[in-house]
Image (tube, rainbow, N blue to C red):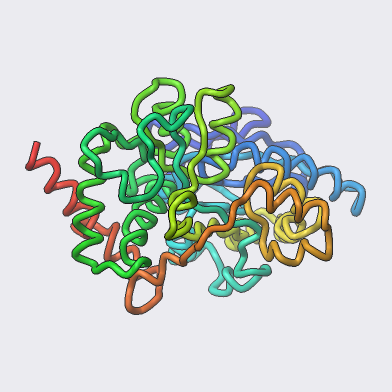
Length: 357
């Protein structure tokens, strides 16, 4: 559990070796804590600044927003254990729903905002060294003996889960069997030298430490990674340069108000305004600027042709499949149980790899 200690005007939340500081003294309705996943730091920096200005114009009230970033699964557990988030913007439905199962979100959380509370989406792509020296063009290339893959752990990272599901789906969505998918993913993880805990850590491993030949990452993270590398890296949309076409998973990072907390803190109204702002034209421009795919992008064609042209330039056409299509029930709970629960397929693959070593 998180322990709250007041030190003057600062509330310090402590859990084991973890520490989170939230400034107070701004008034009951004037501060929010957004607990988010790793690859959205830059996005929320811009969205928060825009919302603060928007809300002050609309209401005359100043708002103070704190951000917490980390591996999505770890962030969900922190909120469940007492980190007083007003909103969560996590990487997977299962992480957000874990907060709901703990009694912190109302049952209708997914239906509360447009597009199933998804103001933006993303996908998983490859980042490779400049010139693509290993000629990595499609998912099947990942199991070659001369390839090292960098991807975070599915046990702690939303990026890690999405990458796993994209690899598995790259077989199934093209007509392969589950047995073939398991064989492919097992071989791919044998090519992973290190499993970082979160998306940003994996980015540092690949881009700064120079480990690996290909980094499986969020599309937005890939763009930032390439930009910061100043010509040393490039993006591959897997399958784009092949007759089969580009294919990957539709990554769905939901947003939600943490109802139990905002009622206690009396921040429900401003938290709701914050979430609704994410669907405005102003927010959509920032979403595209930060390399995320906005909700209902085709609507931009008439609403904002210039932004739609920018969207088309940034995001090549890809066949993006929902992860729930990989299980019979089409439900996220079964995705979690099948692939990521204790003793499930990912653990089995890891155990087999360790025994082989």
